[in-house]
Length: 364
Image (tube, rainbow, N blue to C red):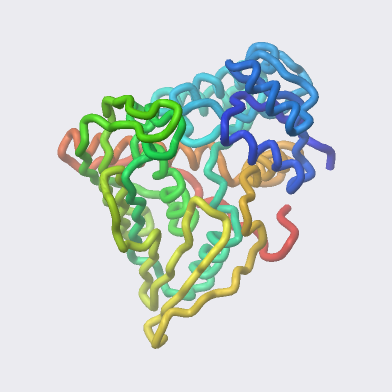
């Protein structure tokens, strides 16, 4: 099987791990990169030996590029992805797929019309830690899942991120920033969600930046910073998720799955490894579970590699799909809608639970 040519749009901090991906996944061939800051694109191209540096328009016009890897800021994810589709290229984006359902659904419809693929991060659920959890659930290690909890609590990025303003604008906030990791992991383990209920608030209307280079500047907060959701899964299980930029400290787990015969402790869904722990009803203490799958170190890029294999073979649906990402976006927006409207929100979207990866070193 030959290589698939990738063109990157957006050469910020996250681009580095994707530019390293061809070392792990032979099918990927990064041939060009572009950024609104041409010097930034040139620097990344030089560092990672990318042969071509383009403007965005030039990259979209290159007939040799098969997939556009969209690493721009969230508010233009859908715009850039739709431009790639219009240029006849499949597209894979950083999360989220878009900042609202309207632009994201238009993207998917345009891709279907042109028979092109849409993929979207996160792909951490394809790592060894979460794939081990999926296998445990499928093997009945905790019985039938009946409930789950997910917690991402902290006090925001303004003390470490070099430009944290966008975290507090539309398309940001703790749910749109970190929720995709947690929700994607839950869907991969437990299947799609049918209904959500949410409560949200803005605790601190202004935030002071304490990182460089904007130390001392004030951010006006325009999106909820403490978001709580109840998830009714199609399977009948009930989930609870809390994401917050308002919490100084806590002692809550990351994700736990509660089954009829035991509990599964799930690792950080923003990583690829463990630990994975199980405690069944007849266990006297928690047991560490040996990981059954590989890709346990930072393997960002496995999602686009999986999509590249699907593009070439046409034999299986890629796992970090646009439909999965749209369902996650639908859930996140519905949680906010529920809080604003004071009612349950029945979801209009559904998705297939992603196919588990095979056990062992061979991925495809």
